[in-house]
Length: 574
Image 1: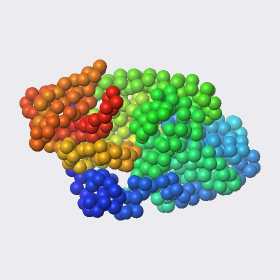
Image 2: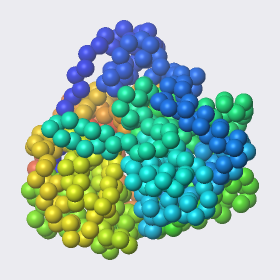
Image 3: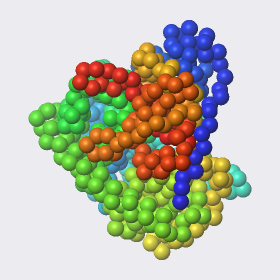
Image 4: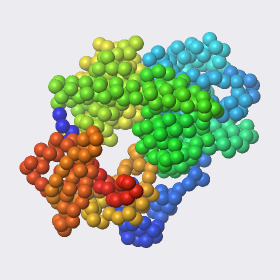
């Protein structure tokens, strides 16, 4: 089964020369900004130069002020507060933000993070029972709660107050094309996804929601703590990348600011993790959070307990933080090995099984550690270009995670199969679920029967930002590309293309032989070296029958033995 791929050139119009002159940038940069739907002088200036002062006021978030006032009242009454978070990056960062501020406010509180295997995602019955038994007065959730109507009703019936801070989709029932949203019976709910919420950006992470509420609580308590505010901003920026939020608008400003500050983080645990990952003193990018630092925090919640990640963030001593950071790094290495093994198993199952006509892939790997399901689903999606669910055996039935494509709203589609699940929730692009083992085959059949994806929607579109000859690239342009960072969801790394390149020679380089160096000539006879990290055997086969290719690429600077040169990384060819 091969991934369908189609190259298209972005054709959005603007006066690129005028924009370039006004903002002192290359017309190529102006065109890329337009391709990101940034239009108008004010928006362009904010995209290029937006700073932390332009973050949206926390009181714009629906019911955030009400939540802060409620928490202030409970703190003043000496009530016992319990934070209940989640075991992923966003949940751990959210829990730390709430803990740090409640501690600063003198609250009587503790923090609980569900165990992935024992409790599952979010508010479980056992967590509510534990809170009742511990004499908790108020539960404060972060990165969960919006889908826990039953559990919150049980807590309220036991006399426990509940404040929900979340960012996930609100559950709904649909009848005759009309959606009826189901809100839990909490005292206060803060979630930008709630119907009618006025917050300007809906796609913020749970840590940002928690930060906004805590900023207002500090105001209510009359506390001005610059270092604590700085720490919250860093944590929210980290979680924004880790939870794959779109890097546009406020998120872009937050992450760009947070990355700069994280290089000398006010959080001792983060500094230790950066040092343990050999990144101390180096410029940090969104890539480092998404693929180096973030997975270390996630590994604790996947293979051990997320309390280890929370302990790292809470630690004030660097000497105490370093051993924890090193343990998290080692856990992540173990997670990588397991991920590779089960991803290969899933690919073999799909390639040798009857999956060719499935528009949604449902893969059951009973022996796989359930914490790896989401990572594997993401890798399978990238390989086949289809929505994917990876299911594994849990302690109580089957659990799974899904990863989607842009044209498929996974959460909405799962709602059509709600009768098969014991629990589910998520976003348009990702979801989690639990179901009885006997429902696995039925789920695969029903989710595909409901699927309306067309061949066009299943074709992965590679959008070329600028058809740009290799000879146009110079150091000034490469330097200006950094103005577009941070790259990620909602602001992808630009894609450039050139056609009719003649491949003269190709060879493997490096100690592992997994990198290819290609010598290519353009139509003007100029020679360039391209670096390629893809499937070498497929390219060698293609070169047996032809030597002229179109390529997509990204330029950068290669430093070797004190000398710098332009490097062209080939990302694909046709």
